[in-house]
Image (spheres, rainbow, N blue to C red):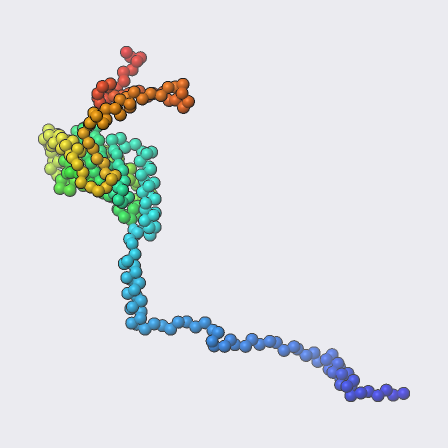
Length: 292
């Protein structure tokens, strides 16, 4: 018997044959372009007048900013660096030199030099050390005495010491403030007359030693008189000296002279030797007991 075939079955049969013989690729998806309102657009180029106005505003802001030094680290870095410099003074000996930073600004240090030997012995020279704002990237600090000290390396009109002689170019990796103070102390013990700032002092030192000595004695005497003079300054950290007042200082002096710590006490330390003659301020050397 012959089987009848429906039109639907015939079409499906023909489709299956065609699928086997001619594979059909699936259509790929094509992305549609974003609408114009969704795209990122660059801002329009400002007009020349607008550009000038913007540049003027930026310049005005820069002028109003506080100066922090050319090193770019700001005031906090400078203060931190100066604290580290001041702490170095405790590890490097500079006998007879005393300094304290100003209470108004860390860029100014008040100091005094006590000269204990040499031509300038007994001299007491007050000075001000000024540190550049861009420390340590700038120039070397300047040191100015409170009055023109008669010295070949001290300006006779301003009292400034020739610091650049020792530090022609300040190197932050090698130079420190304690070296400036040590140099200021050393110039009073080792006189240098090459390229002097005070030509008269240099000439007397080289050609007329006695005349130079007389001028130095005048400077030393003047330093003693000026050290007791009242200092006109609002800075509470400035160094001030007052004459010895027995009613104020004698009791403290006695306590210092009688202060002794027993070796038997916990943490006791054996008292050290005194290099001062009892009852005076004269310095003397202890005689060797073996040779006595």
